Image: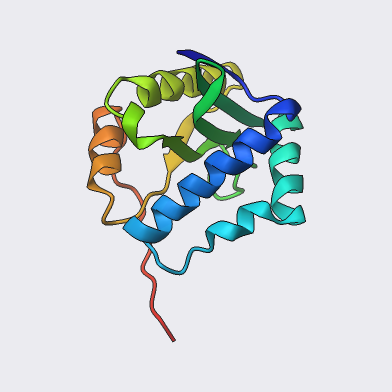
Length: 155
C-alpha cells in the first residue's frame, strides 16, 4: 500500500472512488446525497482545482495500482474574530470498506496534520455526520474534541 499526492492523471479513478464515497454517504448518513454528481463537469473541475491548489492537500492511498482511498483538506482563511488562529480543515477522508481498520486513514490523517503544521496552521477542524460513530471514535482517538454543533431542519 502506498500513500501519495493525488495527480491530474488520477482524475478518472478519483471520480470512481468519489462515486463510491457519495453512495456510502447517501446510504449510511443522508439520503439527499446524489452520487451521480461526481460525474458532472463541475465536479471534475473541482477535483482538478483541488489537486493543483497550493492551499489544498489531496492525497490518495493506492494498492496494486488501484486507488482505495483519499483525503482532501486545506488551509482556510483566518477569521477576523480569531486573529491568532490559522485554521485548517480536514474535508473528506474515505477508505474503501474492505481496507478499513488497517491504519490507512490514520496514516493519511497524520500526513495531513504534518502538512498543516508546515503551513503554520494552529487548529484543525473536521465535520462528520452525527450518526457516523466510527468517524467520531477515530477523530476522538486522534485528539479532536467537540467544538461546534450544527443543527439542520427540513422546511
